[in-house]
Image 1: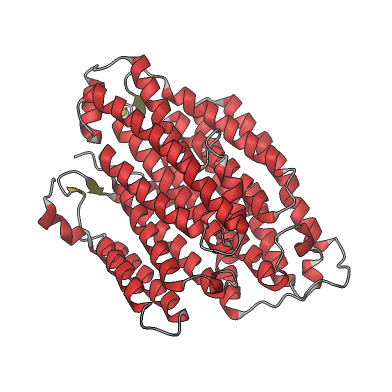
Image 2 (image 1 turned 120 degrees about the vertical axis):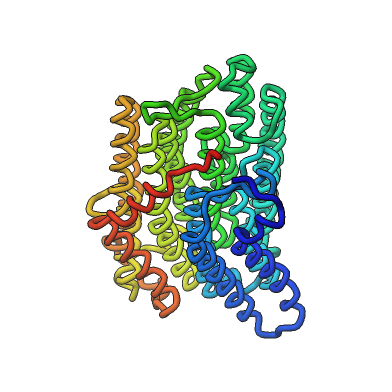
Length: 493
């Protein structure tokens, strides 16, 4: 079903809520003296958007909207839920962050909500032009969010580096997209699919186009060699923004990647498997990127003393794990990526929430700030941090183990045994640096000069919910995997 602009509006309620919220936050900021109300307003807007996404789901069939620029389908709805949950957690953290207290509240929360709106379009774009505009919209908001600490030189440098890397990656990507347009004669994903299925264009030309386009996609998910911005940006940005980039922005990047490579450059065969079109061999390129990304991320993390920077390299490594699911090209792999993103959301946001809690009290983000955390009144945060870190490492019986289990099972079913072995070895390497943090919290004795950690109800509630989810989904994951299975569906018209 193809709908025009007017008919499409009934599907567009969540986006309209976010768009109105952005304008309202900017205007209300001019008249409100209690700036914390702006954070509550952003929180309410995100919750309303989430309700709108879920509430209208059973009543709306799949359809192309706005003359095939975007689509409403199960895949897009899944990512909209992930984005709103990521923004909800980010705003919640921001309300308790001492860093965010020093920034312009109206601009900050408006940019967070605007970035969420752009992510909605990234997940639902079915046109190269729309995909590019959505990615640029999110990137521009992210550049400003990274540099919101105006009097912090590290934040300014991070924002500038992010902008420079993003501009280069964006220019390379749109050049690659122009090649794809030249090959197919259309920017619509369905038209690109039809042109490649008909044998238009050469395999070498398509491979070059894919490589150029991957520069933009790889930059968004922080895949090697497009990852160089991530450590500096994650370190310099306010901690809630770092959490938002590591989960929300990365999920948006994967939504863009999956919709581009599955419906546009692949075809669903009679055997139920996806097959790459055009003979370009791009799955092999993804395989190499996956191996490089997880290996470089984990090895670089071994040398870090700043926890935010360590988690930045950890985030790069996890992008490599998720890229494994794209290599095999099957519905099982697609389902495993979606499932892993859900698990990654809980454990990564939770880890950054603990980092923010420690930084609020001590002003430090390094290992020294975590020394003896369990014996400085921070026993509960230390236990929660251990849960998140061991889940990121993939230890049972935690959610991260189940996520990796489905990823590795899909790769082994596809007979990519070497890739699975490399992933397993990287998981072992990651356990070392995660365990270093746990050892520092529990086994290293405080020197006596460290500040006492107090867990307030607000941050404590968020941490408790995320830690509980990480444990529960480690032993009972059927609802989550069923949701991922239902969501691994593209509307192809």
